Image (cartoon, rainbow, N blue to C red):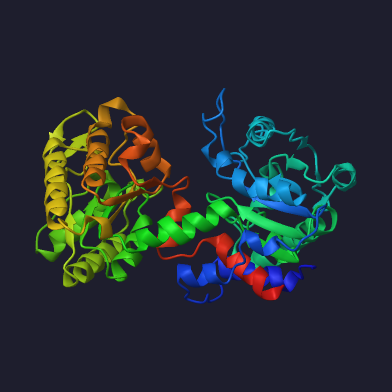
Length: 468
């Protein structure tokens, strides 16, 4: 099915927030998108384009650095059993100036081991002058036996993949037209059936958004379906939330979670907590200095907290407290020179929580566990982010101590979900997988699903399914 430039433009407008989106719940998005079993009627030999979670740095052995690849296996085995010819595409890293784009050669080799078959890597597959797939790709697929699996080389090696990222509103029409050409060429020369099995692919990549519009059939993979319909639905009902990190825009996600009315206790650290800390002081008629994070001279830094975010934090505190939510915020901070302070001066910057805050968070966990005695199995906790610059041993104490608290919650019978990303890295570094109920393989996608903005590829798949 050809993608008209108008359809692509309409989706681009929705994804960039230029056009008004439907306000749908996660469940409503999921109910409108076909699942993998809907492809049972397709005959052997059908070519299927798999948007794979291939952004993985595989280690020497199976099980090392390939968790995202392993998440795809069930869906790929389904296709092998049906005799489909499956063509996996996706990205590894980002295209950077003066640096070669990462190759998916090791990914293809690891997928071959996981599937117990050869998985060839198809190089140089797109003509960037025309944004069309080169003829040798179609020829290679046509010659392959049923049940074959291929990987297309890193799609981010081509500018069309990320053209929508920074496109301004007045550029959307031109970008949409080029991406429609790209999508149509994939449909014509590679496959007309599309399966998304890339949980982490939450960016505005063409492979995740515009390409599905060109397909006659679309579906969610087995793993994505389980993650969204199972663990993420549990997280939507979480009563205990740990939210931290340096990106202040996470406040939008936390605000959306607060507005659902399920949360009873919030522990916060990082820039999010600093905004809440300042707002809390203002509500009490007091002052609290945020150090360099509120200095306009640092406005170009990721940790900068502008005044409108303080106002948002104030609104969140007021709304949350009306619902009876307890906000637990840091009471001391570790500075860059290792000093521990309870108040910040204009030139200060916090890099970790201090010992009093570690004790406060531990006590909060103790009280929450006690309050859920007898209803532990019906209680869920969601943990996202880390408490400081934990990659530096000087500032890992807060994060390291709290990972042990997740084990306490799990041991008490409470379901604990970790949002992936840095939180998942911290769990791997300081704990064990069985210390929590479930750790997602993607951080940003989970926050989209639980927060204020829908996951871009769910918006695209819903449109594709409706238009098919």
